[in-house]
Length: 428
Ligand code: ADP
Image (cartoon, rainbow, N blue to C red; front, side):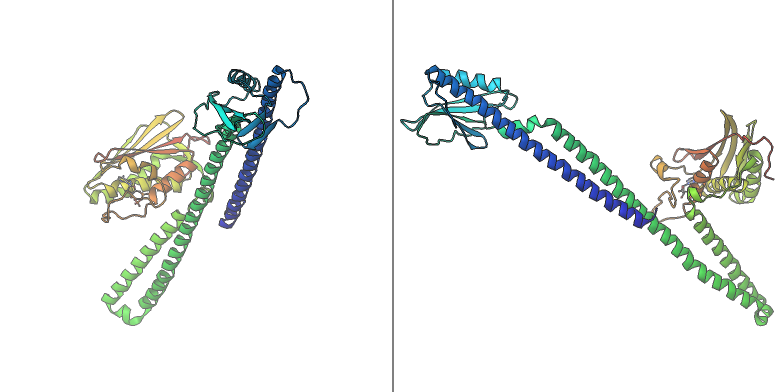
């Protein structure tokens, strides 16, 4: 996917997230308002029933209107006309509030219009949110007797009633945040991998041009009669040419492996005899390992050794592992093993080198990764060999894992399924 497409997707997803959150918040606030309205209606009805009962106890059955006034979001005044006694008020209020399912604490007082005083301040605990926050009852002057009821925990009660909405909003917020973070991380990674790709392309281009020029110039030099006449100069020209070719190979190798992606593998798979290629690898490296005072041991015990693979790349897998085993071990003792396994063959390359600490295991097969050794790089490399091994092993339906203990050497273990296309090697 192109970076610009990904950017459009990220912007689109961000807009969508903001939209979803906006809609959710709109619904939450709407629900809050509805809950608030319902609370007010319930309190109105409850207080109305209290007023009715008080008037009825005074044999007053005359119709009445506008007896309940709400002077603040949490304070209600119920015009009782008659001054109720505290026991009656207490009993009626508690009963009505319970009947109307208003499970939140309240504080009430009885206002005496003749004296202008508010008496009998009582706090009634109810529901889970029962604590008295200590809010005083407002004293509002009125020309009539009334009961003033305050719901100090009203807001918390309403929010409590909206439990499902709050929970779903928090859940949605978490999911969306997680989703957003993943998208941004993906975008960042994509950007980094593009930067890496650009860097590799630029770098190899920057190297290739001067290398080609050096190769061309050396050829011209070598064709020059004066150079040909001087043995020493001709030898120097040869050295320049060899080193330029060597450099060209290295640059090509980096470019090829660095560009490798699962999609770009070109494979020519056929039945391949693993034992034959292991022996060949051991022969190819024989001089190399002997020059370091070490040697190879072969322990090839698998009875079925043919798998389906691309012979060139399979050889390169063995080559990379054997090369590492030799170059990282001071006096390399390398053992190449095969064993029969359930539905396949196990191939392992063991060495007596420094081993690989556990903490680097998960990065080991990543492109360009090298086990950190401070500024000292005694063994040269690009950190591409194991990436190659992993990529191609997977392309042959195989698996690779590492068994290693620092100081005691490393064993790279490969597992491949048997060939389904026949048991005869068709790669030689
Ligand atoms: P390179 O060898 O070119 O650096 P590789 O991808 O082949 O790249 O290896 C990655 C890193 O893993 C190496 O830099 C080295 O630190 C570590 N490594 C690989 N094979 C061995 C081994 N046999 N013994 C010790 N360390 C190893």
